[in-house]
Amino acid sequence: MKNEKDKRKKIFGWLGAVILLLIIPIKLFRILQIGYIANLIIGIAPSVLGPVGLLFLLLSSNVKYLSQSIFRATVIVLLIALGLEFAQLLPRPGFLQYVHYTFDWLDVISSFLSVVIGFIAANIITRHIR
Image 1 (cartoon, helix red, strand yellow):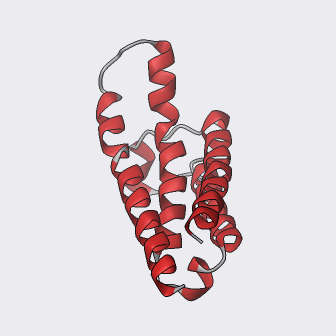
Image 2 (tube, helix red, strand yellow):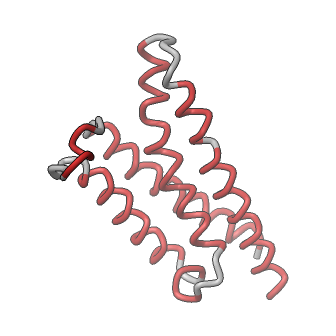
């Protein structure tokens, strides 16, 4: 039982780390103008990769109330992801007013869907390792 739990946490940890690190090259690709569809995919990629990567990292953690309940961790990640998307609508003080943020409903939908897909994947992984 403990070995299976450790194996599951290790898988979630690696998945979370790799997914979050994939955001770096995606951000670099934004510099290149490669076409509308590619720009659209690259534009929403951080909103897709960030929440699901965070979900897997939370599930791999040793925090008891997060790592034991996939649903609880999913709800927390969903609130964080959507909160960050909607925080872009708030007025920014000081020098932050010059930073360009773009609120987009496609990013909100992408964040929501990535968390749902991450929840489904976490349940499949958990069932498969038992």
